[in-house]
Image (cartoon, rainbow, N blue to C red):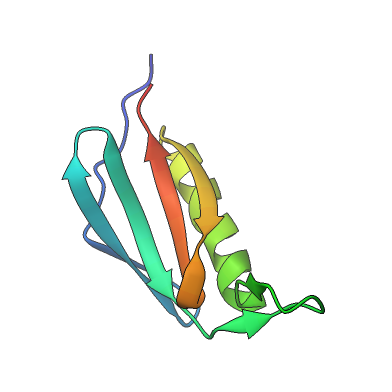
Length: 85
């Protein structure tokens, strides 16, 4: 099993600063807030550049030995969740 890299407090990808949040051992993620955007059905969607930056962060975390997925929620928030193995 390979060693995982330490998670840092903040990661900047392009123009986006992702801040690390750790609520407990099972709830760790990076978050960044972008513009509130809407699709044709008026559902909120993530800002395209931020969504791409979140995917890049997932790739970086995976290369460092972490399992991660990206999600978005309301009001422009995008999260990259770190899953425990």
